[in-house]
Image (cartoon, rainbow, N blue to C red; front, side, top):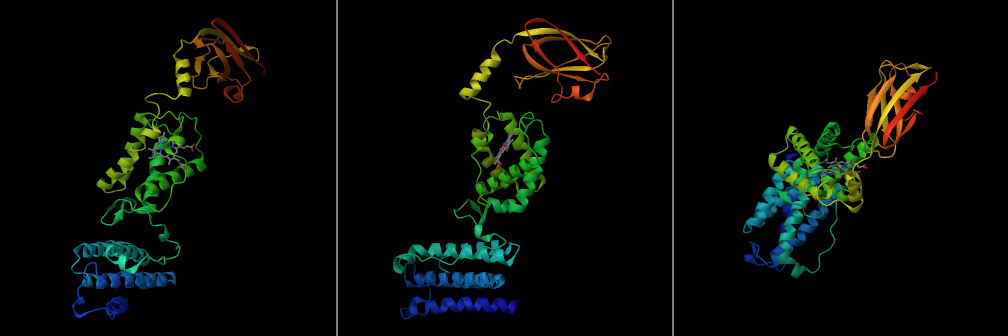
Length: 392
Ligand code: HEM
């Protein structure tokens, strides 16, 4: 492996030497003259190295590409000793690449460093060289390295927040744990009191949405293509308190997964920017919401129900009688228990139509299910005598 490395490093160094040894080169060209022809030549030879590395990479020789790029960068360092900015870029690029798991990733990281160096040289070189030509890019690979962020996200030591969070695998783990915990936490109330049905498919979609959303926001390769945060959460009535509860859960999961505290803070700041689009229960309600709120403010007319339950002609003892409103789904159900004479009382019941559920006391199970019961009752203002006769 060592001799292979030497071969590629030698190849890269030769490349530079050949390019620098053109007829225009004079004896005092040994150090690049900033803004002069030497940097133009370096700029040109870098493209060839990048393209040659891309050819190796695409032919399956990822280690070869990596070694070629590394050799080129090391050779460049000696050529550009008078450019500490570029030397630093190279050192950081090589150090970052060494932390990557595979030769393919390392090659890709170093290619990026070569492109960055080239961009730095471009200022001096492009005026001489003319318009930039299109470079070869490594083809799509299973490791998805083609999906490196195209726009420059904020980087620390050459790494995006996405990379520092640990990339797709680590973020997926965090999201899985977060969603599971949030689903069980009444303070977050993901299902909005059961109004939103999240079956396995919906949970998987939510998780995927969160992973891609985080990726998009932190410079990762996966792009969130769903609706805006405002649209997705519209009508859920999420409060600041619930948002904070969700944020605290996410932070806890990130900590449990030993994410660096500075990176947690950075992600939490990004999450915080979504608050204005997600929280809607505070501040001016939307016109539609406003109507509902006003409706709720009106004093509700109520009636008192005095009833009895009989099954097969006999009074039903110790059964729960539940009035489930059929119109205003937001309202609570009301419950009473029958005595040994089958009687029950429900006071101050809002007027309206109800399904009547009777549970226990030997009554057939269907009557104990709000979806199956055939019993109904309309409560009017004042007194309401009610009698429920359940045949055998
Ligand atoms: C209390 C706070 C929150 C609640 C109760 C909540 C609830 C929900 C629910 C129920 C859905 C599924 C909608 C549906 O499938 O119909 C959803 C989707 C989504 N939420 Fe939240 N959310 C909260 C906070 C957040 C935060 C802080 C973020 C991001 C920073 C976020 C990002 C998303 C995304 C990206 C989706 C769409 C997933 C997809 O592509 O389908 N949510 N949210």
